[in-house]
Image (cartoon, rainbow, N blue to C red; front, side, top):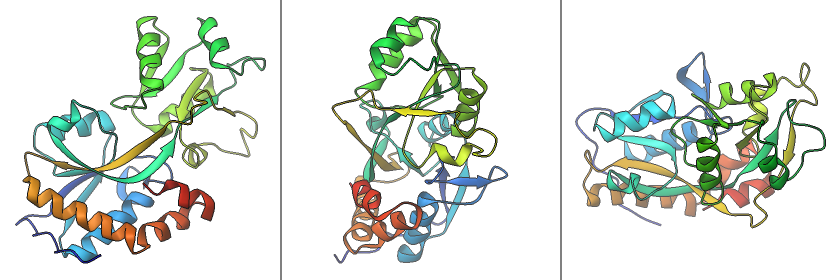
Length: 251
């Protein structure tokens, strides 16, 4: 699909990446790491000719910065009505939440109903995250019951799960494995699926409405779509996951 290259701003585009396993794994907290999102940004830079100033930040900080107009773009953003007030959204990945149960969850615990009844067990989330129409209402209710613990990123979340600070968290296949030492904690985490409806969520490339007009954002959206339609996006996914999972990730 042919599309006009977006016009480059006079300054490098400020973009925030998210520490999230296969999507981006930083090296000592820097944006020098690698992952799906890093590869996508590199492809956008190559095709547009625009320079990007990318950094990795906790997601809660990114929301503050982008709402204030100090950041141009972000990766791995879930759309909500509130967020649509200040961001243009362009989907590039599809995923399904899974539940991880840690050592502090009894071995007999498997279902959502069992977790609901076990009021002493805590659930861990990442600050600034939206999850899905299935999990967000549950998490909101657990917050009212003081059953939720909040962490800055995936690495801290999974560590809290392994250390027993929380009994359960939600994550994505292929993401949490980056933060588990299989030699030290070989059987520390169990995977279960509480969302039997298999609700899919779309991860989006977010573009600031304060920094880009609708027409300008649309050009970037067309470029992302072109990267998908010519097979490049699938190739990026296959670099990090198997062929079947890669196809399932296409939006």
